[in-house]
Amino acid sequence: MADLTRGIDTAELGSKMFRFMEELYPICRSITGEGIRETLDRISKRIPLELREVPTGTEVLDWTIPKEWNIRDAFIKGPSGRRVVDFRDHNLHVMSYSVPVDTRMPLSRLREHIHTLPNQPDMIPYRTSYYSETWGFCMQHERFQQLIEGDYEVRIDSSLEPGSLTFGECLLPGASEDEVLVSCHCCHPSIANDNLSGIALATELAEHLLTLPLRYSYRFLFIPGTIGSIAWLALNEDRVDKIKHGLVVTCVGDAGQPTYKRSRRGDSLIDRAAAHVLARSGEPHRLVDFSPYGYDERQYCSPGFNLPVGSLMRTPNGDYPEYHTSADNLDFVDPRSLADSLDLYLKVLDILENDGTFRNLRPKGEPQLGKRGLYPAVGGQGSGSELVARLWVLNLSDGEHSLLDIAERAQLPFHAIKDAAQLLLEGGLLKPAVPDSP
Ligand SMILES: [Zn+2]
Image 1 (cartoon, rainbow, N blue to C red):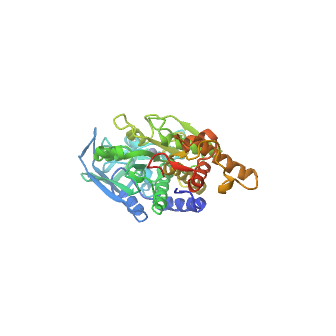
Image 2 (cartoon, protein in one colour):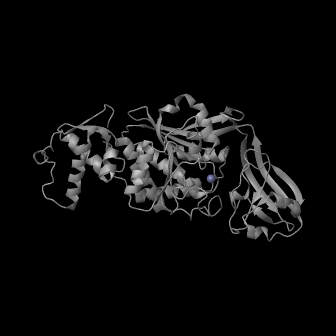
């Protein structure tokens, strides 16, 4: 049986994920363009990533791939000739997908194009306009209020032209062609928790799984939100039934408690595995039901696909005041939370990799464990729980109960049940009930 968590120094990996976020943070990403390409390029230096380009105008399900957007510079110059808003200071200052502008206008007209957060006056909001052609700037409300009447020079040096939408796909082949989908969106500019944290965790996870013999094949998607998952589903409609389990990785770097959002099905193995890991963590956590709002689980769990895809995160989108503002920055995330999230992901995937159903080969009475070296010679608290795990596995391995069923019934961590099953297999007391068990 594979052990996904063995030999892992999650603290060290937490720092590594944080450093990768620092590297990617300055890049101005959007749903298309050079920012997302550069991001994917950096990911591809670590894991085998195939880049896909879907041309503008391609019909994907009910949507159409938009024009490609790129930006070089943008500013507003005040009556004094000084830049009062500058894209070089923060890429959130320009509304994503702003069309090019080069004009002068009075403050009274310019105001209609400036977005602020009056209730969070020190934060720059994150705004996009992917599907209607307009332009806009975003700034701190407290600075907006200081703008004086007069004539302003407004320039956005951007392009919105036919091109393509880019996404990255990394397939790690396992023993089975059945797949686990790990999906993260990578279309946000300088925003840390949503979703640089997801990009960093998914990259780390893929890099780790690369080194292991795997039961499932793993498909990692690095895609622009919504349009990216819709494009992928449209291009892979005939093979989505290979996806047996899936997770959307997002908001995994904040200090909030872990949250698992169930798939639309609600009772898939991924839902049970995530609930088990969180319950056994002993830490505060939340389990929430599927809702058709959030990230790309909305597309994977649309009724025509209804894939078993949930989302394992910390604080969900919209539930923290820094969400979609300049305050969702590198100070809002920390290596320890990233490390904790990675540990949870590894434990959930470890269940997928190792769950199986077995049959007790000596089901009449308890087999004598002592003569097989499977009865702890000296009783103690630790060895007592190992014995209990072995007895549960023997008792419930009737071909009907999976190891996860047994772990839940015994109220023991999955890894304790898995380790017990491994020893009993080696001791000749168990055999897999179905041929594809690990
Ligand atoms: Zn977002």
